[in-house]
Amino acid sequence: MLRHVLAASTLVLAASLSAAQDDPAGPIVITNVNVFDGVNEALIGNANVVIDGNLISQVTTEDVAVAGGQVIDGGGRTMIPGLTDVHWHMSMAEIPQSAILTGDSYEIAIRSAVAAERTLMRGFTTVRDLGGNTFSLKKLIDQGIVVGPRMLVSGPPLSQTGGHYDYRLPNQIPSESNLDYWGKISFFVVADGVPEVQKRAREVFRMGASQLKIAVGGGVASIFDPLDVRQYSLEEMKAAVDVAESYNSYVAAHVFTDEAVQMAVEAGIKTIDHGFLVGRETLELMKENDVWLSIQPILNDEDAMVFPTETSSQKFIVVTESTDRVYKLAKEIGVNIAFGTDALMDPTSADKQGKMLSKLERWFTPYEALKMVTSDNAELMEMAGPRHPYQEGPLGQITLGAYADLILVDGNPLEDLSLIADPNENFDLIMKDGVIYKNEISQ
Image 1 (cartoon, rainbow, N blue to C red):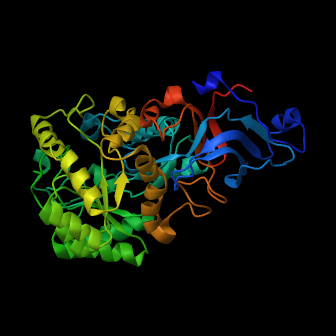
Image 2 (cartoon, rainbow, N blue to C red):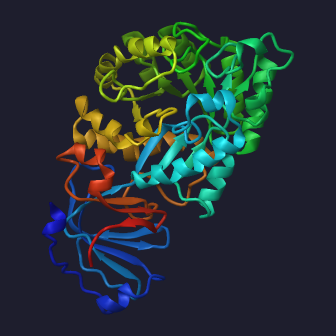
Image 3 (cartoon, rainbow, N blue to C red):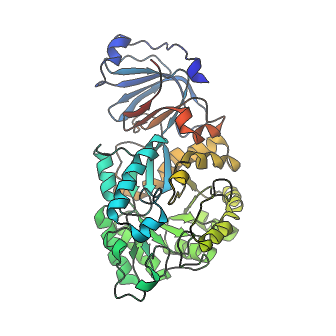
């Protein structure tokens, strides 16, 4: 392994190496690394990367001169941008489903804060959080009070009565109000009819959402909605899209089937999250309308999700039988494909976030996969426009002026994508926003 054969750096510094290492307030210089910039397949060999504050100020193969700061010899490791996950649930990834039935907002908040740090330490420096009330968590992460990734928060997803996010118990129906406990704390929100969809969507953006999430079809983890059901009318979908567009943002839709996806595209929805059961005609329609397929490499294998009900288990089998087909078809057609994991209700499953990423090699080259989980995902997130909370520099790239979100990998993931599956062993340095959160490199 590379850590056992560290090469000497040839960098020439204005100040002595020891002085630079003793001054953490200055720039951070990472020398002798092979850089995957998030865009181009060819590595920048034997490069030196300079971080000033939270941004990358130099990526060069030339010697650089800086005063003060810290120098880290990368020892020939591969530097890649921080990883991104555009279908993540910080408030649901690690909680048991029973917590949604019997827990409260305090339990959810505490579990979410714990999950946030673990997510970052797997190398995921940015997530698009697609459901749940994580506005305060994002705020505290951005302020440096809680450790975690950058978050583009959707807030409470909208669901129709009987839809994917209607978690009311059977004895709560019929109800005089759509707002149960989870609705009142903005975790899930049930909204029916155009006026109510408009109102709730406006409330979500008022809370500070980057984008809006709605459920327009049945789901796996939910109990009361079959997979084949289309949820929301075209008029209701258009109402949600109109609100998002009025905020110069967009709508992401939880959805699986052809009919529901085609209606979502007609309504102006811009990311189809899941889409496992769609066919060629629907994927071609998505390509024609520049709609992203935000699908997850979920298979019925040794890492299969475990559900507490037989109904959800059977739906999971139906969905995963189509995973391979849809990935191949979408790639053939040329649909924009994004990466997310949709880890739910299981700390063990959430901890396999990197392993899920490595499964992309079933359909993509390592380069295609790494580009997808860095600059491609970042391109999708830019659809949030002015609602995007991180606009100081590009995400998902190691280029001049980009955010200093990066990883040093002990090996070359462009040759062996499986290195991503074990971040504890193979990620020797993790940086987010210019701050080092993990450093196992001997100096």
